[in-house]
Length: 436
Image (cartoon, rainbow, N blue to C red):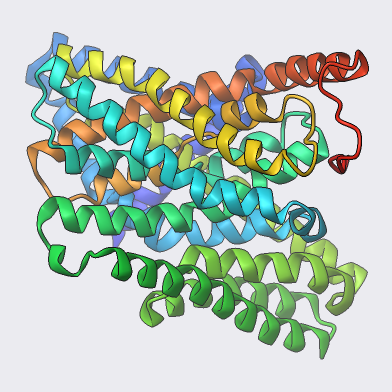
């Protein structure tokens, strides 16, 4: 028990120290700053371990990371709270207005990206002489294709993005991880031979419907129960506790019911964050609920991104793996661009989108902790180590490079699109325009 407390104390201490350094010196977006500082510290420890192997510093750090179990901590703990906190502040009306775009991006977009990345990585691995079967290449495609809601929402809080684009980016990230996890589970079963006989097309569709639709329905029911309870009283401490119970209990029960916990928590959070705050809460309760969940969001994001930065110590790389990591970054970005352009192109036949929507959505599709956690959840094998290293390289690039340049890119492409539209280049009469 003392060891667990010491570990939590260490993480909170690092979060406070790194946050202070970033705020006073680097002045980067909070999550990006924490990742960069943790990376610098990690590389420094690796350098010390290489220069003085007798100290055993690398082995000690890896032992600490193994005690944390990043995959279990995120997927079975932090994720429910982070998703609920994120959904609580999202405008449901804006999501509903863009439901077709978000729905296509979160389903067809994930499937298209999974296939493109899987084929591309298989060709790259073969050219580099990496022993990575095609089935495992598809597994990598499934775990890296969903955009990470924690990373996306964390960055969106600190960059200026047009409201219509922000709704699409946030909405897609909240829902496509549920689709990605289902596809990932099916492909892992095929790759490892576990349950391969049941992994037919019909079974896959049935599993998706059960996970996604069942999760949405369960989240709606759970959120409605919490809504009724909160509407029947006016005591902000109890109501804050109800929201905390809603996030944790919904996620836990969804697991036992065999439905998607992430989707259930998102739906419950959207219900409470929109109808709940307007109808079931007093002004005092609303302020306490938002303050509490903003603090939870900030604390857990700090811990998560520090852990992502430190995971570099646990990743084993070779020259061939480094080459694969470097090639995987443009491969994933190209697949993301195609998987965004196709659904938007289909919907664009009936309505116009915000100028620059496709490049902004493609570049704004950040990957984060969920991809790393899924890679770590794979059964031990040589393929797991290859996938983990490549995944980590893509995630770090996504958080640091895409996160730092997202606002500037959005500003340029939106301005360019508006200028072209004003000149008559792309405006199409008779089509419904995107909401502002």
